[in-house]
Amino acid sequence: GVKIATIGGGSSYTPELMEGFIKRYAELPIREIWLVDIEAGKEKLEIVGAMAQRMWDASPYDVKVYMALDREEALKDADFVTTQFRVGLLEARIKDERIPAYYGMLGQETNGAGGMFKAFRTVPIILEIVEDMKRLCPDAWLINFANPSGMVTEAVVRYGKWDKVIGLCNVPVMATMVEPEMLGKSADELIYKFAGLNHFHWHKVADDHGKDITMEIVEKMYAGETGLPKNIHDIPFPRRLLEQMQMIPCGYHRYYYMEEEMLEHALEEYQTIGTRAQQVKKTEAELFELYKDPNLDHKPEQLGQHGGAYYSDAACESIASIYANKDTQLVVSTKNNGAVPDLPADCVVEVSAYIGGQGARNVAFGELPTAERGWLQVMKAMELLTIEAAVTGDYDTALQAFTINPMVRSGKTAQRMMDELFIAHKAHLPNF
Ligand code: NAD
Ligand code: G6P
Ligand code: MN
Image (cartoon, rainbow, N blue to C red; front, top):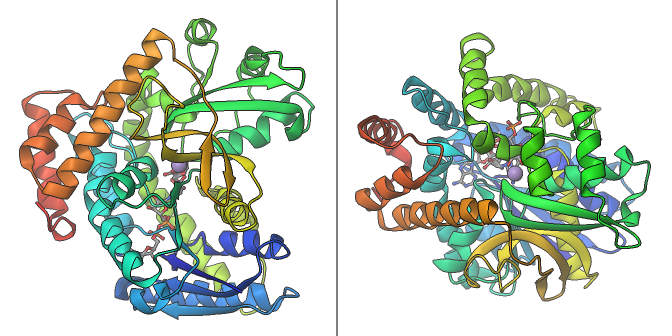
């Protein structure tokens, strides 16, 4: 039987993960699941752990859910390690959003100054986990969901020297779910090609005769069907931009193509309903109230309010595909290996890939148009500098990352903002 270890097991997403495993039990016979958390997450872990066990007990399968504050015990001989932890909890995310806003900039969970500081906090922990895996479960695969997912995956490959890793995001899952519906087709009638970085990819779609139908989907998007995750405010992309591009940008490209509008909207929301982290705190509290109900033994609908809905489809399908060598096509963060020739072969990209026993075999995308190539190269440079700063604790490297990030208005204000973020997050930044 398979042993799964989930770091950040107290997450409200855990029932979603259980549902995905239950659905796939025939091809992925799990024996035990270890949910790992820290002292600060103990209460959440106990509630959601009991809920997870109830879900298995209500299924035909005999699976035991263990809860652990000791990561080593959980990792010992694991076959798959999934990561869904949040260093500093939602309190840290509120700071990532509020502090940039105070300086008139947009700090988002994975974008702008907020995303960079989330990387500073998360990268050291993922590298500790990788070191533990080398000792305790050297044959295991790491399936990462912790954000910023692309940068975290890059850190695992580049600094952890660990290639058995797949980085995940639900955004491509949602796109490939909703778009066939828009056209009244089933998913297997469409051919997808994604390329770029996590939260910074574009995609093209063809029909089953190979005819490009990307712009048919774009038309449907303008008619109001977008399939965006709940956390992204829906402002339509400028039409001329997409006509020129002939690709579909991911939802997060709004922060770059329409930074002004997105910032305006965010500042307005922060003053009324609060930052996204403050809104999520409420959703999370509601979810945990539901999870406490000893009669609840299935995933509640309210989990769909979370931006990361359908995450389990990506996570559980990747694991089942590796385990059973299924060669399913998914969109993952993985080493480029030439699929995106505009970026170095050894860096991590988010691309369409076939997932099997040896991990991801990427689908070649080919060169991007001039504008997108430029964006991509700047963004990858920003990611590499951010990760380097996270590992070395070097202030000037961090400042370079800030200066090159398109969502940071460079100059003295940016440096003041960065300094304030360093002070606010001091407890979770031992390297700096
Ligand atoms: P959360 O705040 O509920 O955190 C999950 C758990 O991690 C908490 O119980 C917390 O105590 C625990 N934790 C914190 N530090 C830890 C550590 N060092 N070791 C073990 N556990 C630790 O967060 P969430 O909303 O469930 O999100 C979890 C993560 O998933 C976040 O990083 C979030 O950004 C990410 N996420 C990713 C996607 C995606 O598309 N890739 C989508 C949604 C969320
Ligand atoms: C999805 C993304 C995640 C993101 C999350 C936020 O859009 O793919 O990577 O960070 O949702 O969701 P939340 O509900 O916590 O704002
Ligand atoms: Mn994501």
